[in-house]
Length: 100
Image (cartoon, rainbow, N blue to C red; front, side, top):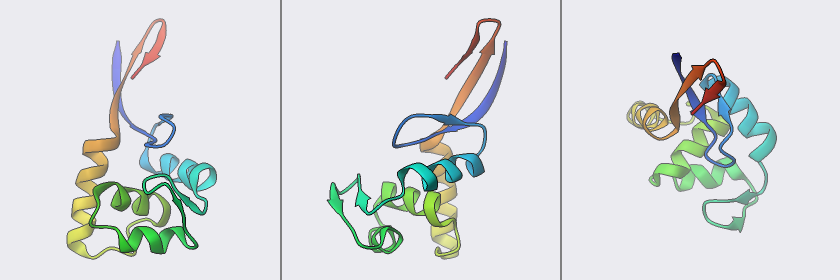
């Protein structure tokens, strides 16, 4: 049995081997003009998340869509800790396959 860390999509639960793969999935599949956190339509999703980045999940979604470029150093450090704490999961590989 082997274990490995991975990242779970906060929208659909799909698991990815690294943050880059999760970001790519999130942008392609979940980026639209609807905020699933606020349950409302928004014109510019990135700007919407920037305005609400004091909320933990909006900050995480902002990083998944826009990366760390729009954050100051303090926000970047917080986002990195939150990504690990809230999205990282352990994948255990067994003879029968894997489970998270």
